[in-house]
Image 1 (cartoon, rainbow, N blue to C red):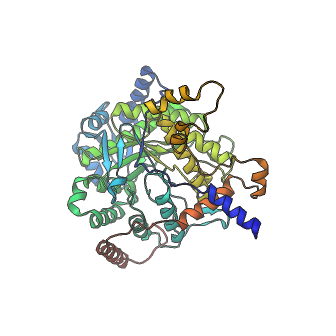
Image 2: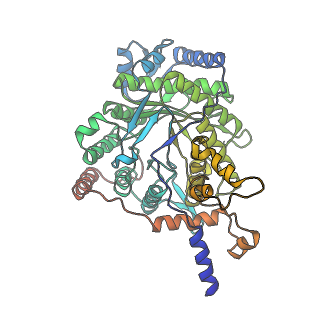
Image 3: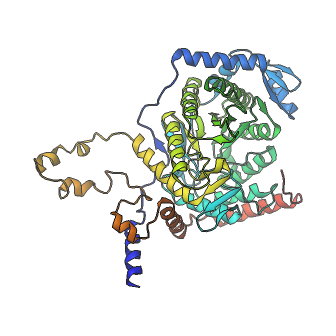
Length: 508
């Protein structure tokens, strides 16, 4: 019993301290450029050539084809071709370079554009994993627990969207429950439903209940990702959501999802030209639907194993592609949406964190303005891991501190402390150390820096086991942000009405 009490006291000392929360990262370090001016011009010329000669398919949406035709584009069947320079001109003329997505708690509003980076959790996995129950299909309980966990984590900035796919709910209605969970259990900004105009409309309706219709009409309060079906296709599920959000003045991240060698050429330069062509075509559609509507250049470009055909992450080529995408987005004058701590590892191990660290750092140096999948992503996007969420969260805090740069204030220069301490002495007891030791250095949650003997006495826990204890503690300490009872009732009534309109389906 006494040994257990000692362990509890030690664990309490190691428990994560309350950290100051910031609504987003402000990057004070320069972006890293991998393409010369000539290289950028070549990629842009190649993208224009793709759009003019090959064109892009917009399937099952005649309304979009009419929009393009009315704008003077060459429309043949479902294929749209664009004159060189047409897309760039439309985007640079009316798309905003920077905007704010509002949260229901104004302290959590996020800036999209400029030197700001917003870190979002994992999106889309049908499975979850933790050390206690292993890999399993995700449930709505898992979904709400992840929303609550993300709400508690100071180095994340956004509630995200489909943080896991709650497969215990009907596929055609679960978006309503997911939106409700984000609104009810977090007061951060969140994403809307992405698949189809109807679901997008539901998200906008619920946002109007939460914020008020007049506020939504004038301000971004949702966030949509519209993926192309690479190569060079956009289907009506994506285009329908894109149109709905654009007409409501809500942001759309126009994001090709490509794996080199399968969905794009196996080379970096070829993939970049295709990615730029696809995202420009989609952003042009946003501007034709609603000139001035916020949109982002999206890039989710990674590599494929030439041996197995499996997706690979954290590769040199993926790093080059996101760094170049950052340059291309800045030349278009729009914010950049991309991805972060991706991994094909099955568990939160050394592979997962090597790939995660590489991916997140490359996206930060690219100047990304919103980084999706910044925590929790495993198995090529099939799994959200509770333990990896915590380990990745440490990484988010670390890169945020790094990109804050070097403090050159008078206090940070510490000249008086150096003079007062003098040669051959130590700074452990100096007034300067006493005044700064809590804030001068970043303090991650998961590492163990004790002696070997102490680590062994505490159970020889690796990072994943330590993260297991931390996510449970964070959920236990979750503080409900509350919600106006009238708004809560109105949301529940709206959801019940929408659900009653059609039978349950386990497919879209």
